[in-house]
Amino acid sequence: MSTAYEQSGRTRQKQRTRNDLITAARELIRQGGSAPTVEAAAAAASISRTTAYRYFRSQAELLAAAHPEVELTSLLPADSGDDPETRLLVVVRAFIASLLEFEPQQRTMLRLSLEPSTQPDQLPLRQGRAIGWFEDALAPARDRLSEAAVHRLAIAVRSAVGIEALVWLVDVAGLTRADAAELMVSSARAIVRAALSEGADA
Image (cartoon, rainbow, N blue to C red; front, side):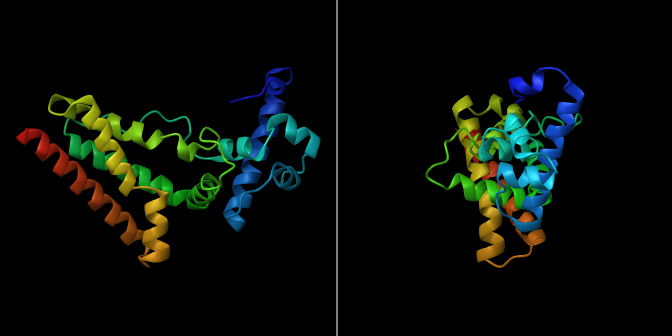
C-alpha cells in the first residue's frame, strides 16, 4: 500500500525509491536472516533516513512490503480441473516452493509474529492468505462439504504446511528441505483425503 507521499508528484521516481528500499530489505534478510530496520534498509540502498521514513513509517510496514506474494489471490493454474485433492496439492506444492524460495523472509516474519508487541494486522504471516488459496483450490468440494467444513479443512492443511512446519521439520527433526517439503505434501494429502471421505460418508 502506497503512502500519500508516494502518490504526490514524480510517481516513477518515488516508485523506484520504494522498490530500492524493499530490495535492500530483502537482501539484508537474505544475508543475515534478521529483521532490518528502516534505517538499515535506507543505508543499504544509499537513501537518506528521512526519505526512507516517508515511504515506510515503521519496520513492520517495511517488512510487510518486503514479504513475497502479498497480492496473489490464487495459486491455481488455469487448467487445474475439478478434483479437489489434485487442485489442493497443486497449490500446496506452489506454496511450499515459494516458502523455500523466500525462507529467510518467512523466518523473519515468523520470529516477528511471535513478539508480543506485534499487532495481528502488521505482518502478512498472520493474515491467512494461504487459507484463502487452499479454500480456492477446494472449491469443487463444496458439493459434498459445507462452507464451514471447507474452511476448517483449509485451516487443517495450513497447520501442516508452512514456515512453522518447515522450521520444526528442518531445525528439530533434522530433515533435508526436500524431505520436509515432501512430508508436508503427504500430510496435506492425508488431511484432504480423510476430510473428503468423511464428507462422502456423511
